[in-house]
Amino acid sequence: GRSFVCNNLIATGGRCDDEFDDDSVVEYEESFLELPCSPALFGPTSPKLLPPTGIVVEDVLHGLDEYGALSCPNDPRPPDQCSADDGNDADGGVRLVGRGMCTFQSKAQRQHELYGAEAVIVINMVEEELFLMAHGGTDDGMVDTPVTVLVTGLDGEDMGHLIESVGDTHPWITSLIGRVRIRPQVLKKDGSGVVRLGRDFDD
Image (cartoon, rainbow, N blue to C red; front, side, top):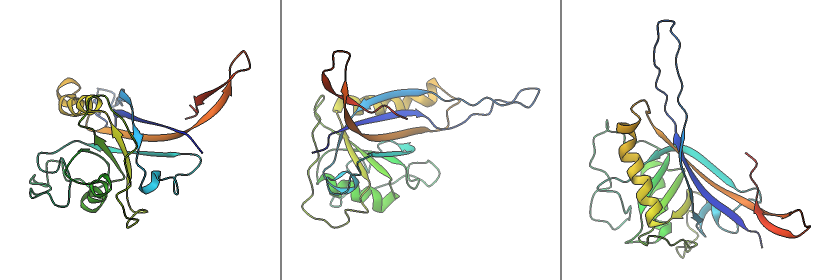
């Protein structure tokens, strides 16, 4: 079968226009984190739907919130008790959620239903573990389910800290972009003619 490589890139997405006497502006673009991930066996990354060329989703990154971190249908807590002005309830985007309480598929579909999420990054409870997230047992909403990937607990913690601190350390940044990329692995020959498994790094 086909093999794929999964990774997440966190970069600046907003622009701060520093105005000078000559009315020029400066655009800031910077990559902060590039992390490994593992895809889900449901939705667009399921074996039935994943295209041979892979998938790339790039959109504004939204962090965990106090009430919607687990994002489960049976969670008694409201999904969002923030005001409409604080940015936590913005539509779409790449959204972080924590693992637990319900199936991965239910978690991803809830993010799509509540926020129109384009991609969901699930943070594992285990510090250094990655695995393929299991199918939720139903084909309902498979096409509408956002691209869903898993990151380790440690990497998820780094992502959360970055989102919380970037405004203090980089005050010119207005938003962060999350890019979820699942790319095909390709066979390459090294100098000795030995075939090895590599990654397609074309941008």
